[in-house]
Amino acid sequence: MKVREILCAAAGMLGRVDAAAFLTDGVGADVRALEGEVSALLRAYNLTESETALVYRPLRLSEKVSSADGTIAYSALSERPVNVEKVRKGGEEVDFTLLADALKTAAGEVEVLYRYAPAAKTAEDDSEYGQGEARALALGTCCEYALSSGLYDEAVLWDKRYKDALAALCRARGGTLKARRWV
Image (cartoon, rainbow, N blue to C red; front, top):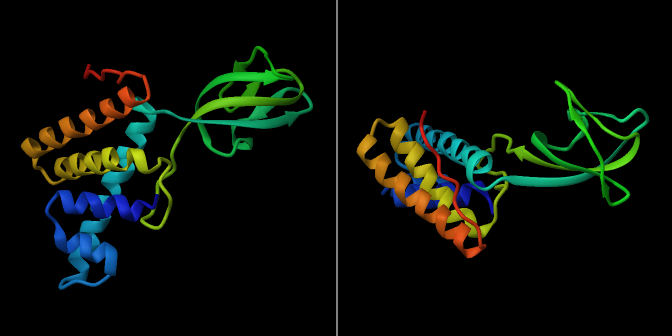
């Protein structure tokens, strides 16, 4: 699903019909102001996608990498790893050690299973999540947008809707939503 579609849905939820039309058609009465609105929505989306991936619904990737001495630089992986969960060699789990800029494990070809943080997106990029998570991402985008606009009471309402949508997704897949608390 394209980020533009999620931004358009968020703009519609916020009652910003002009921004939704600008995202769809690229035309509007005050193009400069609408570009600013779209930019603010995009920042809110990137924050929401990152929060969703790092706190609630992790993005996982498994890829095969080989090294002669067992040291695999994080830059050799296709995404930015946040947490290495498992390393397998020949279908069996092997021990590994996390270093500052690399992963130390058995030499040869291994399969690394890790969680990753999404890169910042543009409106033309594809979301890391599918159609099922689109509504939750749009609600989270509304929350972040309201926070950045100083609409704190509205942000509380959008945040509740966002968390409820995430909880519904977790229940549908047989999981639970991890509680988040402020320290």
